[in-house]
Image 1 (cartoon, rainbow, N blue to C red):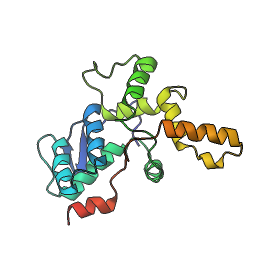
Image 2: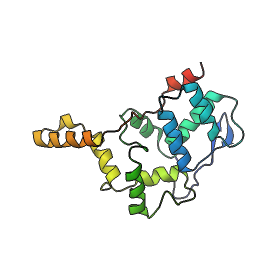
Image 3: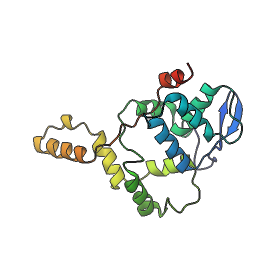
Image 4: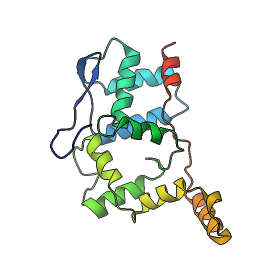
Length: 188
């Protein structure tokens, strides 16, 4: 795992022992995640588009190249692999599209960072700051409500209130991470 207190964020991925320089700005990785989530784009076209995140040389093994980008998106070296695997099992609790305003305002309020004006921010720095947002921000409240199992709430009125909130803040489109099978199918 990378320690953000003294190690630099990577500007490359490693495929078969070789380093390949990639785009690292947070905006590009939000676009990447939206591309992955877009069910209207066929997987073979997605793969072709994903390879554009490489700066210059693209690995010959395209499947490994896409997996490496997926690992960078998930920040596997920033977070423990167990944490990422666990988070992939759950339904999505936020969307960069649906929650853009909440995320933008939280960064201004909490960090004084205007995401429109900042010329560059590494994707993993963005993820670290996003994860560190206080629980009282609107985006973290939305995440909390979306991840709550309303049916497990015993109090009838509270359950009703939580379900109403969940309905109001429900994600408009289904977000999902590409599965190993989908990546494999793209190369079949």
